[in-house]
Length: 217
Image 1 (cartoon, rainbow, N blue to C red):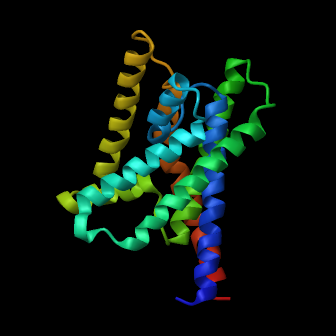
Image 2: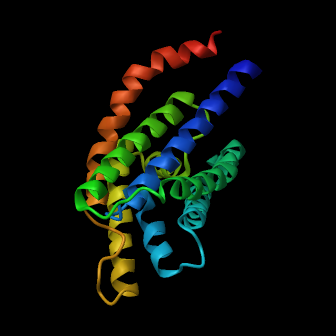
């Protein structure tokens, strides 16, 4: 892989991170829940408001990176530590995205639902670009891969268990923090979980060939 190709791949990864963060911001602004992987950080941002959602996402992603190190031990590749600065970048992008969408009125339920769908589409596009870049995985996907590799389980099955576990953890935290009320995890979380994979597949199949061609120029 040439230096020019590597630079272009990382540029695409950063664009993908920004779009993913913007997708989270759109979904968050709808106040109907966020994607499963962000749901724990979202609940914590409601309870402990001294940190923004972006900051809680940084903390959550760093916890997942530590989890990878514990699971993989000597098999953990040092290059994967690049997930740390990328996690910070994702957190900053999320807060910037929230600032960008903050002026959009979302008082009507239909508008809030629309925000969830727009956010899911943007998130799916961002994820597909990061996958096509094929350099460093985000901490959530990397954690799932670490678990699947260590236990010799299929990635897709572990991913489902991981997403469900994130949502259950978010609900439990919400019940503990908010007098047995569910805060920050709603129908938007379910919609995001169901449709994001389809959106990623849609964009990946259509963008992989033309974007891969860029590496060869």
